[in-house]
Length: 365
Ligand code: F6R
Ligand code: MG
Ligand code: MG
Image (cartoon, rainbow, N blue to C red; front, side):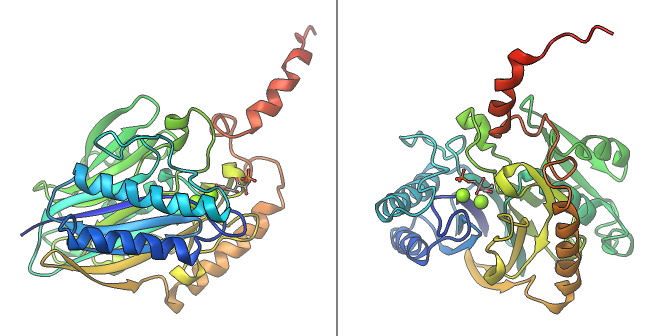
């Protein structure tokens, strides 16, 4: 049976600053999705949050880019944003950048990760959601999952995985894409995705064409033309029998890599794997978080979730992330805690620099 999993997310308002989605907004989204379920628009759903972002996790049989599903998700966010505005929650409606729905939710502000597949006899998936970072945060872990045998034993041990995977990489500056096969083109792949502020992994396929993973790569600043918050990304990964094991997928997040985001979307900090109940960034509005929810997709329904980073095995990663946070914070407003000038282009810092422009004079000697 063909099933589509769509994860659509937006920052529609939060509590006590950019910290946490209020319970009543999540409840409202649940009500809206359960009405859509009764009408047959979707087959199942879960609503969750990571920091100030609300995630709609939906299964259906309508394929990707389906306008009925996208419109329903858009209206759900709109209605929740209206309540957020009425209650004066913080940054109410922040990511809903366009007024009227135009057939697809792409380019309207929310982030989207969705894929369609023929359900295997047993179909485990992992849904990731981040806060206080950007889509480039997935480059390193997705690379390690699907191309690095030091992370994923299956690439060596399992004959089904031995052929490797194909990566769809987007140049987010030029809106172009390229497909690269690994292990054959491993160095070419790294040459691009190592420059993660420009080249981001969008999808990963098995060599037989089966979709393995998808990442949301929408950029709020490009839609709005100004800084309106980070494009906190989501991703979906299929796991087990013919794909990477769930544990190989999670292993890639055990190293708290430095990612852009954190305070004012302008700082580098460690991506911290946490249980959903701990996904409320507080210190210096962070550090950046990632949650992982595991599901079985079963005849179009979603069984679960299992909160996968809710495990003592990730305690050391979290401790390390806190050490790195202390170390990075001690740089204060200096690089590399502060992002590079190119990465700061869409923050509010250029407005400050602009004021000094007239005072610059040529260097003579
Ligand atoms: C980062 C983020 C926060 C805000 C910061 C200032 O993605 O959302 O760090 O940038 O709290 O927010 P405003 O300008 O809304 O006071
Ligand atoms: Mg926010
Ligand atoms: Mg956020």
